[in-house]
Amino acid sequence: RSARLTFPHLRDFRLVRVQDHRRVFAHPHNFLIQQGIIDPSTTLRFASLSVEPALGHQLTAAAFELEGKAAELVQVDMDGKQRQSFVEREQEYQFGIATFTDIRGEGRREGVLCLANDDSSIPEETRRKLKVPLVWGWGERSGLEPAWIYLRHCILACRKGGEEAERSFLDETFLVDRKTTIRDYLQLHPEVLDSSPPPYLESRFNG
Image 1 (cartoon, helix red, strand yellow):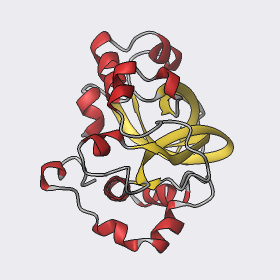
Image 2 (cartoon, rainbow, N blue to C red):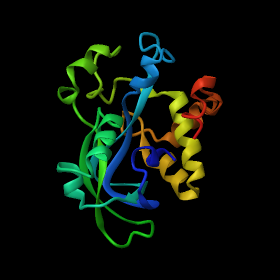
Image 3 (cartoon, rainbow, N blue to C red):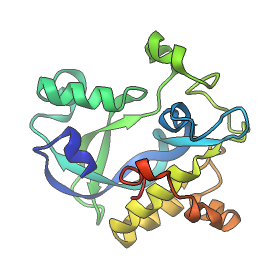
């Protein structure tokens, strides 16, 4: 449902294995901060997800087909409206190309994904609205932790994707220290799964 909001004509939605990339909670979830649901002056539990190049790491992700080659989708067009919607939806990220296989590790291909970025690429108007000192570049010892409402949402969504999607999210997703997995984090904070969103965001943050 989420992908079709931006790409209504997508095809072949499925799970794949992305090579040489790592999933990390390493930058602020600006939507939750701007909504006043999280106060960054009182907590460091406001991180959202990104993916970064990391040799030797893998992760399970959802992939789907659009018209055009991967390089063309990053650099030129999808069609105009779809690309504009994609950029607006994921405006803090940069777009890159990654190698992926099917879920069995076969059939290598290339696809587009959203990658971690740097603050110089964020529009000045957006930066003025931020309530945190920076978006990208939080250090491995910064103490940044996942936004619990968002983390719960991700876990529920991956459960709907099946056993492999959930396993990968728990074991191949890391805190900003790049060492602590989400499975480890949940053992310390099982109450994450009780972090319900406010009623007006239930449809967006309930997996």
